[in-house]
Image 1 (cartoon, rainbow, N blue to C red):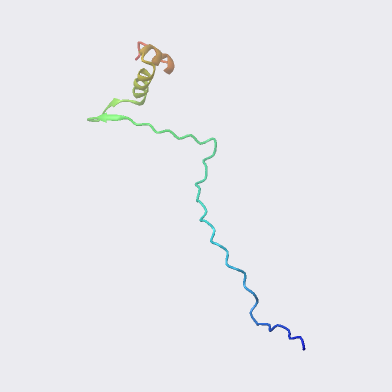
Image 2: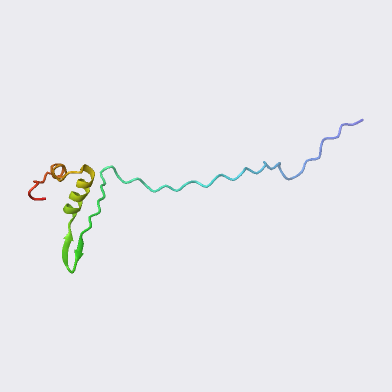
Length: 82
């Protein structure tokens, strides 16, 4: 018996399809280390300042420390000025 070579096709073997990759997460660029953001608000009633940023900070510190004297010391302010 004669040996018969397998028939070749004109199409090469296709590799199996690869599974889809998960979508890459988009990351926002980190701000430079020297960037500092600060938001300051002032409350005005009838065009007159009612609560300024320093006064608001003093009230926050009084709440944290429980003492007007300690809050003034933390801000570098005299008790008299508070």
